[in-house]
Length: 181
Image (cartoon, rainbow, N blue to C red; front, side, top):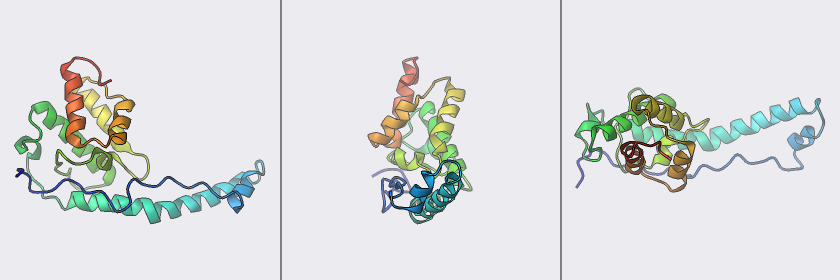
């Protein structure tokens, strides 16, 4: 039995998010793109329309599923310090940094309490530009003077690390006195 009042995040129905599809070679967008200068503007407009459709039909529902799960969690004062999953003050501070970054990118009213088994890919993913990893890296550097390279964030995504694994990696690199490489 764990000491959490909430479960780890569950993956959305569509995961991982599908890539933005390329236009078919027969489409007007592809044909306009072949016309130098004059065709590029109509091609850009058609691409923008296609992107909006992809965003509203695929990416936005994924983001909404993640946000709904985070908003459903109870607001707990000092959630990181009372959690057994974040043992040290470094673990707790990194968890709070990640929670604040998630709140900022996903437009939440309050930073959500996090579960150590939350998939880092769901926490770090955003429909537009994935600002969360950037904010987390900058805040960890500011707080602990430890650089979290982009490769570590990619590794966490590709190997589907849970939040605890990501935080453990960061803390381990700090205790070794080196950058998180």
